Figure 1 (spheres, rainbow, N blue to C red):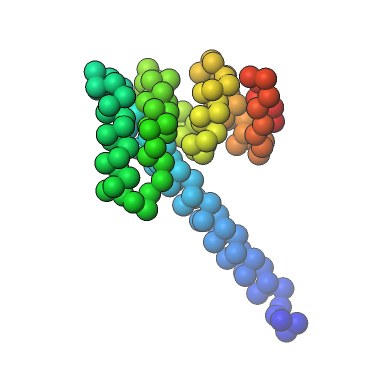
Figure 2: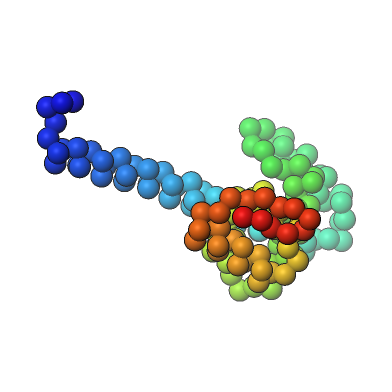
Length: 142
C-alpha cells in the first residue's frame, strides 16, 4: 500500500464513505417501512376493537405461524402497535423523525412523554444532535 498515491487514497476513502452512507440509508428506509407497517397493523387492530384481545391473541398466533422467522408479533407488541396508531392517528402524516426512530425508542417516548409535540421535538433533536437515549422518572435524558 505504500505505492498508492494520495489521489488513489482519496478515491478509496470516498468510495468507503459512499458505501457507509448507502448502508445507513438502507437501514433508515427499512426502519421507516417497518414503523409504517406497525402503524397500519395498529390501525387494523384499533378499528376492529369490537373483538377485544381475542383479535390480538389470534393475530399473534397466526402471524407467528405464517412467518416463523419474523419477530415482533407477540400479543404485547401488537397491543403496542394499536397504541402507536391511536397516539398518532390524528396527524396527517407520521412525523419523519418519529418514523426514523427504532420501534423501541418510539415505545419509550409514548410511555414517558405524554405530549405529542414534545415527542416530536425529542425525536428531531436526537437526529440533529446524535443524542443517545436514557429515560428516568418520566423524563427523557439525552
